[in-house]
Image (tube, rainbow, N blue to C red; front, side, top):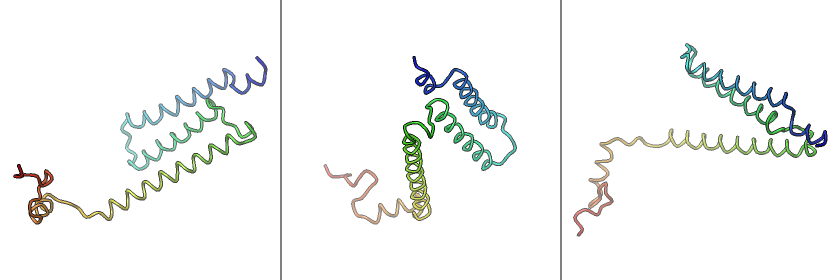
Amino acid sequence: MSAHSEASHGTMGTLMTGFALAVILSVIPFALVMMESDMSRTWLIAIIMGLGAIQIIVHLVYFLHLKSDNEGGWTMAATVLAVVIVGIVLAGSLWVMHNMNANMMPMSEGNMVMDSEATPGASMSGGHEGHN
């Protein structure tokens, strides 16, 4: 085994450092939720999401060995592009769902009954009642 291949897979010390960071970054949000702290729900969610983002970086660096000098920087560039695309997809999905929720007319039980009575022969089962 050459020194280059051993360095690319990391040493036991770096793997244990990554493992310790991953455990700490998992225990903190778990403890915050289980202790039912008095902080606001918004801050709790922000802290959990922030620690989750840090944990993703820890996994990329310590376990997947993502470094800017690997393969001439193309691995890092591909990862940044993937993160940007995922961010665009998530932001676009949230935007569409928010706008649909804000612009949809609320449908109550009374409206559904009026709609089915207004259309002759229409019912909740698709309008096939009484046609044998």
